[in-house]
Amino acid sequence: MKFAIVGAGGVGGYYGGRLAAGGLDVSFIARGRNLEALCAHGLSIESALGDIRVREPRATDRPTDIGPVDAVLLCVKAYDLETVAASLEPLLRKDSAVLCAQNGVDAIDRLGAILTRGQVLGAVVYGNTILVSPGRVKHFGTLARLRIGGRDDPAQKLAAQITAVVKGCGVDAQVADDIDAALWGKFILFSAMSAACCLFDLPTGPLRADPKHRAMLERGMRETAAVARAHGVSLESNIVERSLSIVDGMAAESLPSTLIDLRAGRRLEIEHLSGTVVRLGNQLGVDVPFHSAAYGELKRYANV
Image (cartoon, rainbow, N blue to C red; front, side, top):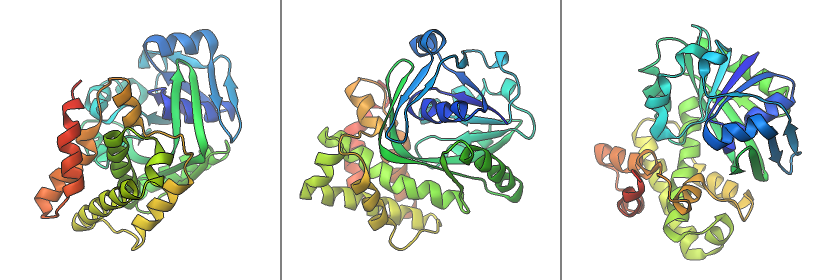
């Protein structure tokens, strides 16, 4: 099975590296200094699950150099989705899978409305992987989970095929029976965690250890869960408690990508995180004071 990784940052670099090390045909689409580093020095991953070195990865900034693939793992920022979509056509056949690994819950709908070829799937990623420098990825902790799924039978069949191949490379991958529930399950955690870490400029450990911050984090999760249920998403009754347990299992030094971007002066995905919770909450009549406050404070960084 032939893969293209579009966006070779923390997530794309980590999973692309695992697949390449597992012997799969993997191409990376990158740009700038990251592309230069991949071509000159290869890709390295530091992880408690096992370090990896891909010495000569196939890397380019031109999808036409690669041609059609079986699966595209799309790891660009949520705000870049429409812009990048136009560049995907050379990679796609009618039956190619496009795995949306964006933060948020609307990537399948947004991308599906644009592409004329390929089958759009959701890819829910759990874990903290960071591009610490061009060509170098660091994985914090041991959580590295991938859940793949679609919204109809053909998409689920394709998801099962891809999942089997990915699992063969040692990745914790499973098919999501309900991809929207899986997307919202992560979103409950990530929307609140991103907002709280950015508001207080704290990594995971200090944030969860402070009783006031932890209580605020839980309120944010419950707001997102309430919006999801009002939106018709089927969630487990203990989804918030389960999300908090995941946070408790994360490496203390781990940072959400939003805080990394904030500290680096880069644009935030806040429109697709707390912004989504606020907009849907207003439409559905769900009160979301935590996310409203976070969005009001952080939205000025949405277009840096």
